[in-house]
Length: 514
Image (cartoon, rainbow, N blue to C red; front, side, top):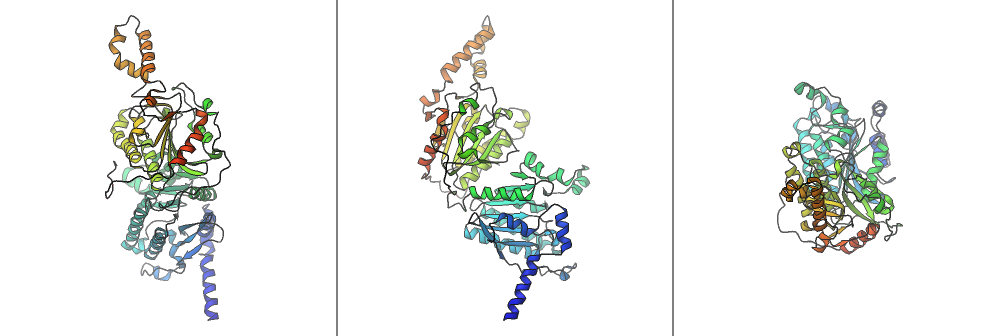
């Protein structure tokens, strides 16, 4: 028995050592960490429990029978992040380039099933060359099993994909099905067809990073939620995100003690936001002033910058914040902003995260490109997401809220639990100038001084229909508040709504706009 135990100990030591030093050196030459170094950074120290470390493939032919490394190119198991259980699978590029075969896929399927059964988050550390060509259709079937499990776990447990190397072809669909995608600049890429195929089919020449690098997906495609310069920072931010999420959809997000007073006045807000609705300002500074210790995590920071989606805490409780950004496109809603916010609202609702919406929106972006691109369909995604959400929802109108964009941005008419407004708010079908040009067109045209007459009528329209208390008088705003009291009011309202319960109609699922 003792000899067998010693033999097993030696075998495990060999597995932990990994592939050859040459393979490890090649990995480091690319600026990448090894698979176990990555897991060590993600999880709490000494908390990792590996599953099936001795698994090997059973494929024959094409030279595979002579190469049967342990782990088969993927390390799977569970550990903890800040003491809470997290499941993980991580490709080892040093073994078959991290390519997926039958045994490799079976290990991933098992750990995904375990995560769902345990009700704990799943993190994938992706660094693989796609399907293992030598195993043919068996490898493709392995991806199908991953996609099916991604879908089954969607909205049940948080799923986070961390791209630390290449991810090409059908393999890219698994990260796209998860809740959050992290990427590292220069070393990670995602694309369905690589540069060589693109050149052969279209004649376009482009590098791997130019086609599917971190910056492309963070700024242009919206596939990537977070992009960082190095793996260490990236994995540290994954830990931070996990600290803001519940383990599953049956729990609330973790609360933490808060030293930032709940009744702290935010006097600076009056200076941060100009009264003139045409003057831009940075909504990020408003969020910093309101949330605990000015700390928040912005999602999709560099994509669709005219809207902000962020996770933060108010009095120690996690909230999701959706806010128009007047510094970009005046804060209008367009196709990309609608998609970005809709997915964020759905994520918050799935994981019991209350939603606070900060409005300063002049409307939807006009233009042929937007209409032909389907702004009606994409804007409806955000409308559907809000209407379908049953978590506590509070909206705050800072300045203007015009037209359909006002309705879509969680107005009281689509189910916001509470709606507040600052004394500078203007809620209307459109701006006063545009409204006056429509309503009083004849009077303006017949006036001796059209410009002066237009100014008089604009002033009259504002006084009658756009004064700060018009919506409150009609019950569309619950209260007009002092901006300095914003933090205290939001915290008090969220505390009251913490026990909110909403019944959904009986149905298999809705049919949201796509």
